[in-house]
Length: 594
Ligand code: OXD
Ligand code: MN
Image 1 (cartoon, rainbow, N blue to C red):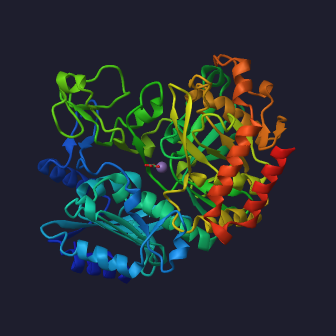
Image 2 (image 1 turned 45 degrees about the horizontal axis):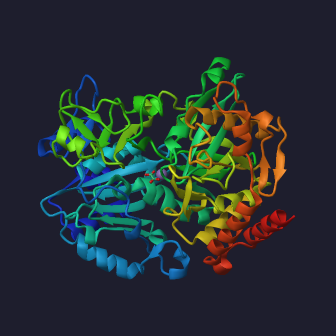
Image 3 (image 1 turned 90 degrees about the vertical axis):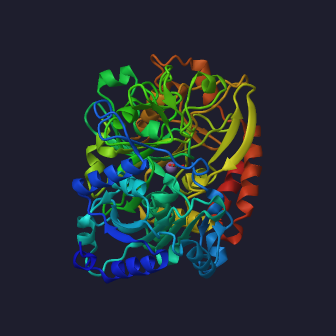
């Protein structure tokens, strides 16, 4: 294929030329999104051992990949925001001067694709050609990246068509290089719409459409263009009368976002006709609609979910989603039937297996406690496989939000659910989000890690300016969503979870929706509104009224300590902390002193 005949956009051609001059690949191949090309790439990657074809009858079109043992997760300490002014990156991000970063990484990229092919992936975040979609071009020397991008985003020649002769795009350059950890860098240049990633082959570091573009670069674009890129799932809550209310929810990593997005309601709800529909499980792009509401869309096209713990009970919808056209990364390989296995899938680990490192996983290894799958092993699965995918998934407008929900993992502090007292108070609630490491056996409370809006690792600019952007957005919406906080992880004094979680979270979602519809009252506390216990449906939940009361308590002494912690946390933002948030903190303190 003659690249210049197909690619009409000079800026794309220049980007390819400059990157090729730097990385020196033997060949350049444009990814066209066709099945023929995909099949050929799969076959090539199978022939080199990069991926393994799984049982076609049991897992059609599914593959297994193992990353290098030193390359199994996002690397926050090697992730940088490279903007000209250091202050603009803020106190939470790592910063590098863009000139230095280009020079340093340029030396690493130099000649890195020699003997390899450079693949050119044109992809769209959002529906191709829709007014809310944004386009990226990722250049990579990894077939694994190409195949994952084809699941996670919309890839193909129609993207180049939509880009047109002059359109702008996010430039992503990735090379595995030598997978040298000491030279691994994930660099973002928000002022240049550019991402450079080197020496990694792990999803979160190399599927540049996801965290790098759709959150870090997009959050910066959103600030400048008046919209928001958030680390949020989006779900539809359908009531028996067919009316569906949409909720976006932000949780730190490993708090069950994918599970909540694909929740199956308890039987008593199913019988009445309630349903949950998945619009997205990780990222929401949010804009102000002409109707004065906030509208959210999922820019992704697949799910990059954590495998361990996913099973028929915890998330049957996710499990079902992974049964076709899926790439599994770092799970155990069941050699008996050429399928996959991970801890928490079922109680029958395969007898004849290979672990995620590629070593035989025999009785001796199991007895020694060696895990079959890495704890952060993943599935990359097409969204359209999901049994509960929302019909709004393909709607370019997205969905109107009734509620925004924040959550974290707190042993004692946060009640099961509370509602903020309005937009600014809701921004405050999001800004103080936190998770604790819990020592469940003893009930001891661990270290608090503040993770504002679950964006701590993903905000592409100064977090204080990000808070200010949230406050500004509130001024633009006539009918803002109501803002809530949930905590599925509250513990009793013995360290047991008080709330069953998973599908039972439906009971809390129901209260949230009723509050949005102004169908139930609530009890005012110093931090916001909690449910009157009678308004949470406990039928068949196994939760007693006494436990629910405990779940809903707001302890003043605990919150006074929390307020001190917030004050400390806020100090680092200096004068970039919006005055609205200092006022909210002062109001909380005053409420607690009453
Ligand atoms: C993810 C994360 O991989 O948040 O989605 O870490
Ligand atoms: Mn995430």
